[in-house]
Image 1 (cartoon, one colour):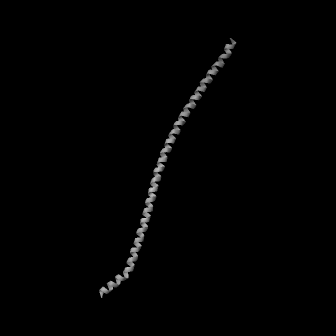
Image 2 (cartoon, helix red, strand yellow):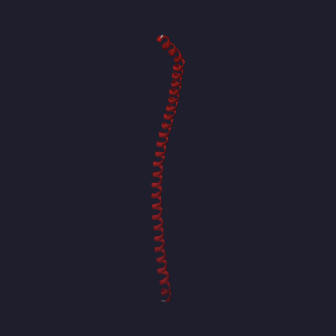
Image 3 (cartoon, rainbow, N blue to C red):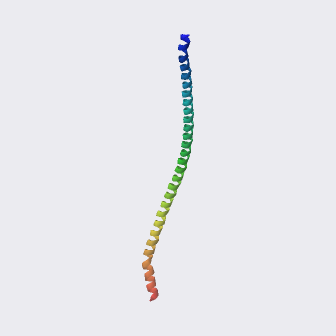
Length: 104
């Protein structure tokens, strides 16, 4: 009978330990599943951000190309303006003399 009494507390301790082990395993499995979901969510967010970065890069390239075109156009217009002014200045004395002769 003494052996049965001695085995009693040990037996209940063993079953308590296995219940504790199961609880720990379940908690770890739950945490692992939650972390996997967070990882999947973060991966999806990164994919979306990569798409946004690619879209913004295309827009930047388009804007840079348009800026280059506008700059080239501006220089061309400026060159033509200077040419027109020089032509006018060259013809101006002739026009002045023609007007002076016409007044005579």
